[in-house]
Amino acid sequence: MSIDRSTVRIIGAGPTGALLAILLQRRGHTVELYEGRSDPRGVTADSGRSINLALADRGIHALQLAGVFQALHQALLPMRGRLIHHAEGGTSLQPYGQRPNELIYSISRHRLNQTLLDVAARQPGVSVHFEHRFEAAEFDERMALIRDLRQDRLIRVPMQPLLATDGAGSWMRRRMTMMQLIEAQETDLAHGYKELSIPADAAGRYKMAADALHIWPRGNYMLIALPNEDGSFTATLFLAKHGETSFESLTDKVAIEEFLSRSFPDARELMPDCIAEFQEHPVGFLGTVLAKPWHYRDMTALIGDSAHAIVPFHGQGMNCCFEDCVEFDGCMGRHTSWEGVFAEFGALRKPNTDAIGAMALDNYLEMRERVANPKFQLQQALSLELERRFPQRFIPRYSMVMFHHEIPYQTAQQRGTVQTQLLDELTSDGVASLADVDFKRAEREIHARLAPIS
Ligand SMILES: Cc1cc2nc3c(=O)[nH]c(=O)nc-3n(C[C@H](O)[C@H](O)[C@H](O)COP(=O)(O)OP(=O)(O)OC[C@H]3O[C@@H](n4cnc5c(N)ncnc54)[C@H](O)[C@@H]3O)c2cc1C
Image 1 (tube, rainbow, N blue to C red):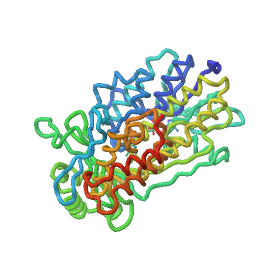
Image 2 (cartoon, helix red, strand yellow):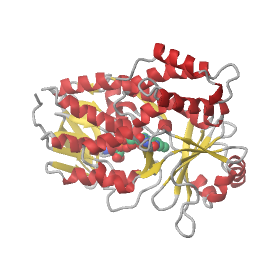
Image 3 (tube, helix red, strand yellow):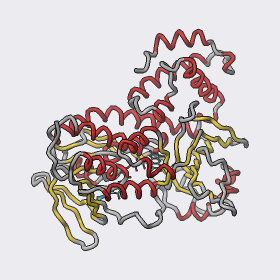
Image 4 (cartoon, rainbow, N blue to C red):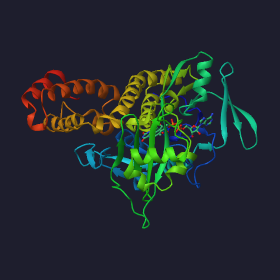
């Protein structure tokens, strides 16, 4: 069973659009990819969007299925855990998992985009049109209007179909919402982010452990840093946009210096340019997008961030988008009409993207506050111990999300809720270390409340 081998148009050649083009071509479609920006290949990365991303099992699985992973392998920097920089000084490592493959990887966004585009553009039947911006859709006429920015002329392309992978600020989604074809909600977080850099030392070496994601949790705000290939780290400061200590209030050099030196003294010493960067770099927006449905008839569907942007605190946005592409590809194999593909895709995917959206929000509190709390650290250690003892029934929620692509996000969320209750119960009443935990009770409760993972 398969759909007509029609030409598929895609707007937005970010990670989702490029991966989707590769998978569509594999199914025999001719693909036209329209991207508003210029070709990122052969140019250096611009700042503004996050420079590096955490890639985990779901993303890796999708890249492997598409045959792209091998080309990226060299560029992956393994991170084994969170290295916490405590407010009172000192550091501690919280491993992400307990098996050798339970790692996440830092990868350059620019390198990833370039590689995906390279592979996509090499496929016969895939054409990529840079500096072509989608501007409007005429649903009655089944036509989309795309502006060729080089020649400043509008071209009309048929929507049979036109897939919208145009990111969190999707024009297609806003257009469909305005025309009341779908309902969508964009919720901005009260916090924004700013990127700062930790350069390599004079010999080009990393100034901190390179195999970890560094976190400076400070309650209402935090700094994180991920390694880059050239010995540097990109640090990201997450902070309230407005209020007493906020991006809005921190404007002059003295105040910025005082804030950074007081909050992150060890990081401040490693960031010689941070005051200028703080003043020059834009504040990035963070938010969650919820939309329903994700498609209109057989003409268009939202895929990736355009359908369900999430906050970045689980390092899953792009991983989730890659998983979308795999699910979409699976739906194409089961339907003879585009409307059928779109409807099944939305029905399968939405409960899972809602779940990761909620877990990503929850993880902000975990990263900026809970990781520094001794009770949380005990519960983390207990989670790993319970996984060792009952691997069929108890897998830490973080591990389900990051290392088990076969476990849907929604299942991870549901089981995670039960597990959190269990961990609370097992560490109450004066339990101060693993030696104090009643493992007989743990076994009874786990068997009663958590079915084996199929
Ligand atoms: C600070 C931050 C950190 C993050 N960290 C991680 C992480 O560690 N791990 C992770 O998995 N995810 C992370 N993410 C999320 C990740 O960046 C996104 O989920 C991912 O980029 C979404 O891919 P996309 O292709 O759907 O959208 P985008 O990456 O936004 O790509 C959309 C593309 O469409 C183009 N476009 C937009 N409008 C038009 C138009 N009108 N016409 C033509 N083209 C258009 C854009 O130029 C762009 O190329 C992070 C996000 C942020 C903000």
